[in-house]
Length: 553
Image (tube, rainbow, N blue to C red; front, side, top):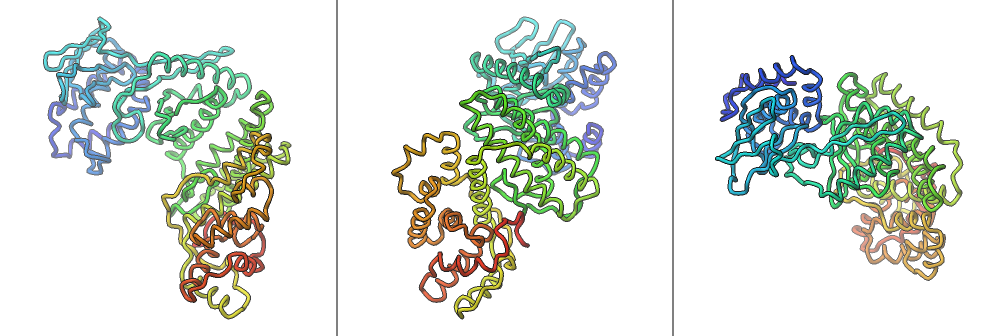
């Protein structure tokens, strides 16, 4: 990639300003590699450097991600060379870029410049065997004298039973969050201590009970990027940032261990995807995946089954180890993820475009999953999971699948003529990604009652249809959903809830068709059809209630 960057820069006519001497930065890198190749490898493999390298190459080739000027991004090459020079004890002088008021040397640390020196585009770094000094507009910050303006990279080692995990807690590199340039967000002392404590506890858990995953993490995880819990991102990784995992704060070591196990699978598959192809041809985002609220491409679904089968394996072991207050959450997570992955695996077996390796990949995930599926799960948990899966799939279809008007018109004609329907399964639909996200109130109640069975008594007097359904009163729930639909026929939650309360195959598998027919009849006649009668009319034309995994195109 570096050679591709140099070639792109050679052919570029854009000014690189203070960073035009790219050959000098390259020479410093080569000198460092001659002294300590393992140090240069560690710097170049730092996840934030991976993000930078993909961004700057796109920028140099005229496909920039944003308005960041090329000269500024090329400057990071000089900062990378400077980081290697500092770590190898070389003598070198380099211009380095200032981003968000700071100069970052990957894996080394960050120089914060005085407020009165803003804005500045670059500074001068002088490295020597004694350390490094940064100069910008007369301000000097030194590594050697441990100036307050320098923050070394936070590193942490967790050790258990002779196995170690070494990571950088990256809260400052501008490229750490896998996308746009992020300002530093330094953790305070309490936050750092909490991350270190949970990481140590999670590492002990993994080494003791999940040694295979511990070995993967020891070899493949190099950086943890703490992110704001308000972003509602549990964890993420990037194909450009191998070894990096961005995480929101976790409540327990078990939760952290699960997130690490999950995300390292994405990193492994990203690396594999650079070597082999699991899928060829067009790959639009039209597939259903139970762990996502949005339509996914085949490659995204492959990532999902690979990451989540590891979560299933994790909980297959872990649910027998958690203390009693948390055992039901463990059972629910295990059962839900297992059913989600099984459905996706069965769907992917017939996916167009899978290569031979792709089919073997799916088959391998299926074998791993089958080894866990024989585990016993409490009946009420199994029932709740069935409800959650039905609710999620039907809601997904209402949000994202648009029935084709010509097919809907055929059903409307037959309804109006008093004839039996053609099958709703024959109605073609286009997947059009909606911005609607999030679980329904009904799903939240189903989960809450599994996790806290005593809540059932406290909810006994609740009258809303979601509550009635969650409590097992299907007749009361159906009546409530009908009332809602009469006042708001577009209400997706009510269509799905009615289908669940009535056990209607049509509403559970093709709710978007039922709603489209309802709306078309209302438009034609001025009178809305009764949703219960409409569902009963459509149901016999649906051969079985098993939800289809993908929308008919």
